[in-house]
Image 1: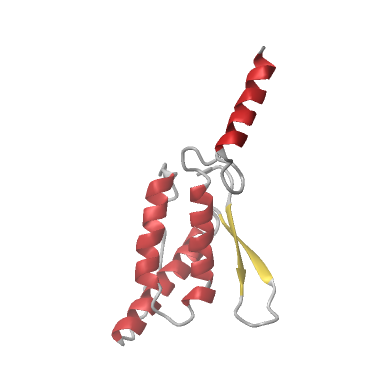
Image 2: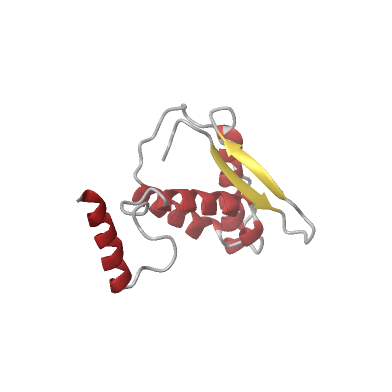
Length: 139
């Protein structure tokens, strides 16, 4: 993932006429975004086990770069969603929108993603024609 630019995601509130809102994660709001994710996790556990615990304040320990590969990010998203998905409002929550956007961005970093065809894969005949065309440009 490109750690030089802020991470952006979009969320649409559950109201029928709600518009999409744009959100950004960067070094200025890591505690705020972390708190939002932390609270969603606590809300889920509380809902699942009929508890009423409050999420403690989230403070990012220190701002540093993490070099994580796309597979690890995808696995972390799955783990987080498993823990945070119990509330009836999960599918329309800001935390869900964040995780889905993070997943989509991680998928684009998987090996071979950029080389794959956009849309359905080409038939063998179309693959051969494309290869022959590339080959003709080399001659």
